[in-house]
Length: 124
Length: 399
Image (tube, rainbow over all chains, first blue to last red; front, side, top):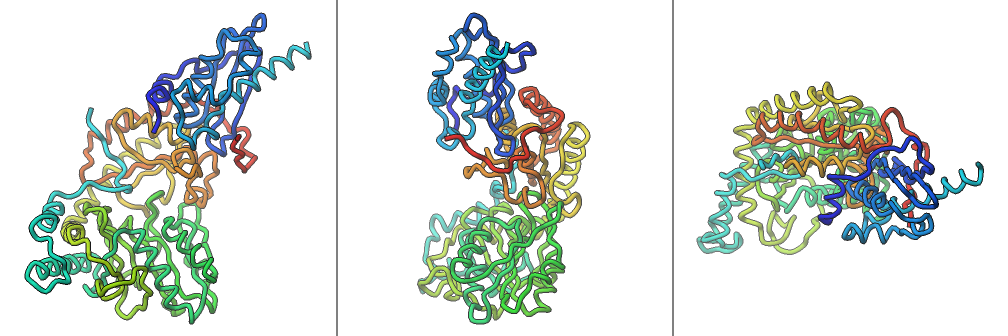
């Protein structure tokens, strides 16, 4: 049911963990529904230098989290904001249709983390 | 890598003798049981022999057994067929909230056809309270159907007690015994039921063979009209090989039941006590004692079932889950929710069901592997001490 790439990222997820000194944190999803993703980013000179995640969810949700944290490193904030759910799914060699909406939370969580970073900038 | 199959409630491998019993009817003895020449008679004889074996397994009379194609068909047949036959007497049925979809969706069909249906709640161990059955009965009630044993949480319902209430009120009583018949003693006289569903692949028979026990004299409207097969109650040329296989499997189940169930129960108890003692924040679902002998079901807090299932599968261990993500409908099992398990916890559902082929070393390997898989997923999970964001009970899938 999952592509090889999804299984690979699910069984060996990259960037698992938290960044205690994160510059932005974003959470998407609801445990009631089965998937929650929390993403942490470090930003320097408008570029995402590091990203980590914690995810409660199915194989697809974990693979998506792993993939999005890989994709985002080294990108400018504006480039990162352009990463879509579809782009993440494509990088993973596709997701089953029923998983596209509920488990594909990576891009949304990422965008929230960037939003969080920008709000922190305004405040400081 | 050795494969460890622990999903016997989904289906079972066939017993070699049951398979053997089918082969002649897939090969040389291919006659139609309705034909009057010898090959027909041979097929007919096989069906009647199987009918006797199935009847004997549940202490029924052979003429009280109607062969069907599945447990789901038997459930549809019983619920719709009996209710429709009695609709002039009344239009109310009672079922529980922990029924199989083939009962729940048949009940919904009846509701669309002008019946009223009551869905009885269960307690946290999955038990239906017989008093609640009594209270739900109205002058209109014509049929009550309660599952014998839950495939999802293993709980065995107090069917004899509930059947007594039905009888006292002169109401027909059906039980879905698909997960229990052939695995634990099922005696239709002792249970006092009027109708009972069962299927062969739950006791090492083939898929494609089910049966409905219908007490002599019970009226039923067919689902399938046509010829005179099964006394005119279920038309269609019989699946002779599958029925022959079911007959053999029933015979073996009757002979070996005690031995099989003692064996899986010992392994199951070892599994349950090891899981509960080795892993924190894990809860057994269903009734602790009154449960199917090979059934061990849990919810594991802070992680999700499909992820567990896939990591176990990568180790060659095949199990089931009632989590939303592991279901095609993406909804947490309604049975788990009916037991009062909150949705976020139901996501951590995992169900192990053992069979006669399960080996002790397989359970030992599982006991060793499962905690590692849980800690790995818990390392990835943002939750470890408590839940946040669970107060919102609705899931808004982002489009």
